[in-house]
Image (tube, rainbow, N blue to C red):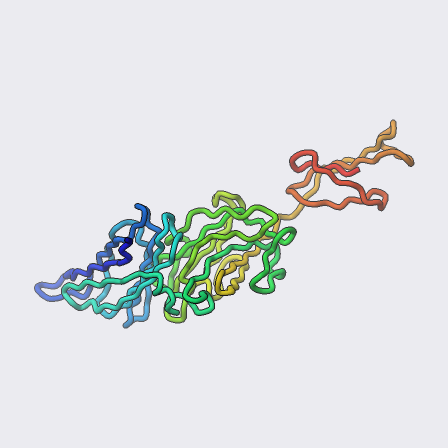
Length: 324
């Protein structure tokens, strides 16, 4: 059975004082949080109640050491019990500690049921205690989105090829770097015509008492390597984005739909050649077949008229098109 306990072992460290207590504490964080030999990932959030500031870090290895000023703190932790980062059940926990003691131990029980607390998940983002799973939807135009249930399929589909999801690490909540933190594996976008990609990821979507800074990265290709665009939510997906591409978030309690706008690049057509089946191909008479050939800059659907009559358009290879 998995032991879902994050142990915070707090040891006093003297800083330039002779025989007296210092003003800082060295915090050594360790965990026993492994399922099937692989961690699903763990984020720790530390709030200084006196200064009302928060820092956050991903616990990638088994231990981490940081230094904190003496004072009263709130420790929050979120983790997953799956075999990949951000997969499996979302587990949450909270504890408080006064870092004036020479030595203290704080245990945070991170359990699935703890995520029902609105300090982690707003009420609208869960149903009967089950946290809503994230689905990513690529749209060519966000004006097509009218709320949860819009899917941007077919011609409304955007051009995202892959995604990454990140919970940001930061030394201070006043200076968060959206590019650093616990990051999901590359998520390949669902193939056309569907615009919706299901992830199975369940996040701390944010609350009024704690920020879970979240970044969604979109890519033009299917391997998270080119054409990156970044959308940053400093307080979690339940709150408005502050930077990056246009996006919207809606939920029905069972799923959280993240909509992003990524329109196809401008369409170019070149070169264009026209010929006829007439012995002299620059002329045509009744009964001759006129053929139009062109190459497009990207795949697209075309409507072509010759002499104001609709004609059939075929795609013999690659980006080459023929209308006749």
